Length: 614
Ligand code: G6P
Image (cartoon, rainbow, N blue to C red; front, side):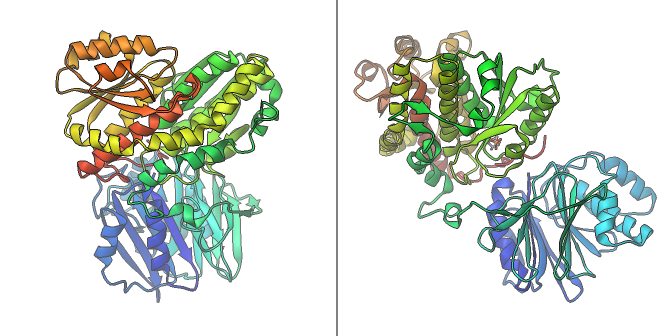
């Protein structure tokens, strides 16, 4: 995690850095800092807290300089405090560095440097890198560019770095391995650097996504030069950004999370647009068609992901088994990567990741690739590392998701997985034309149904007021809605800090039922469909123990009405699509409860949106 931004140009760097850091704050907000270069001096400003705390710390912006670097931190090495905040300076103070990633051998490097007389201010791995680069430069009497390249050969771990030299206001050096880094190319020798393109988009659309083990020299007059750490020259591949500034703004909403919840009718439509044809009764995904044989002959699908993406993967399991009749396993990427899993060349691995940067998911992909499996990516961020590392894939087209708690990315992921399962089911003749057609019709009506589900907002807000002080909550679902129960519980705990658990409704009697008393809210997804009767029996079991029942039901429901304390109605849809509609009130619920408890909805404590460390 951590967000990094840099600017080399003719304007003042400070406003560019601050605006960029605010855009990158989703990557971590433990501390923030900037370093600016002016008249041969580096001015360093950093403090614990958010970018707004940094702004107050700096005061009236009197920080001049047309070269600068900035950082927003998610702490890994050393607690979040002023000293550990980035940027870090080298021993002599000539260099300033920002870093996202983890230098795994930093302890060894640090001990060696201490033995050679270096003294360190912070507990971070990053400061070690600054000292190392400075030492290599003075020992080899070489350029900073070359010194960074040589130093990185000694580093084990992940890094995206930018280095600024007090004595050279015309250059910045950037490098990356495993953590993302994008260079924006402006006019007249102006350069921007960011962990993603969001700090860059309003200045230029021309960007270069750096590859692993590349080092870039950004020079006002000589231009952009890229070499590998093995010193092989590369030609920068300049791409045009497909990102719009409006997508990064709150657009009248108080919080990004609320905006993103309300964007779902549009984001779901964007996700299936051009991929389904009502007339032809077909689903077409080019990412599947290019490797059609692989899908037709697949013996097994393994889905890997983390957090909400893992929950989407669980829905994917039901979809692929139900519709395409392919066995599926869903794995936490972090477990899969260290489990020595059995992977065959006729397996397909689907990696799901909103950010496309999650370190564990990336490592899982690399492992599966090395065993010869076909890798398919489901990512939201265009050009992200995972989208580039996979053999083929399908973007979710949800647009930038900035709230740390994932909402529209989840429904877009599930929409893509539904389309994929249908596209593969067609190819394997596993689905009747009639069911396929019915599902395509249902998919095309999803935006309207999600819009109707959003209209439950007032009722959800009222229910939130009643349960906002709960200490625990239980979420129950069954079949397709079991992953929705997990996702509902995750949303509540991550932004309102209420302990919540999701369970398959029938599993409740094997443990969680012991927790139920008159204080315990139990959120049950009890929509019409295959498991309806069974879930109603589970509701009876909760009621018998005096638990408070809040049921998400199909519009017009009568029976559950008599059992539940509160009901929230959603429109009827096919079982396979219920996850997309039923998660909406649960997203709204966690939003309202978090807000009522005074929590920071967009930036919950200790979390970050893009987890680029193990
Ligand atoms: C973090 C975020 C979650 C997200 C998970 C996986 O934990 O806070 O919202 O679901 O990472 O992220 P990814 O970008 O791979 O979907």
